[in-house]
Image (cartoon, rainbow, N blue to C red; front, side, top):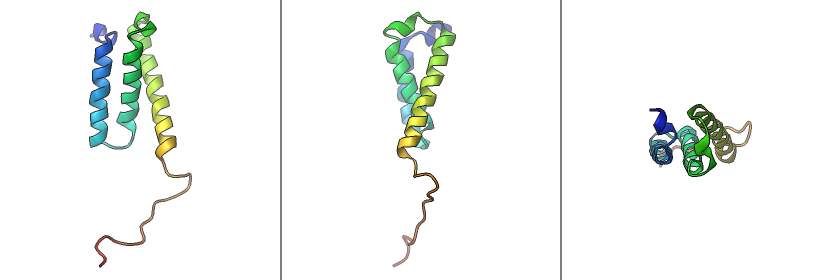
Length: 92
């Protein structure tokens, strides 16, 4: 199991699965994890492959948190604003 943490294609496969899960469970949580996994997967091709599995998981957690915070800031409603609806779709 430890060997899988240091394998680049496992991270990219996890990113793909998480991106698909985001379609089913919206809220940018899965997408934040998918972005973190994709960045770690690409970085495993380079210098990140030399780190221990615990450090790789720590980098993944940090990147996922940053990605989620950026997504939330970009796509959320302005602070204090509530989405309201003035008309009903069933009103003729």
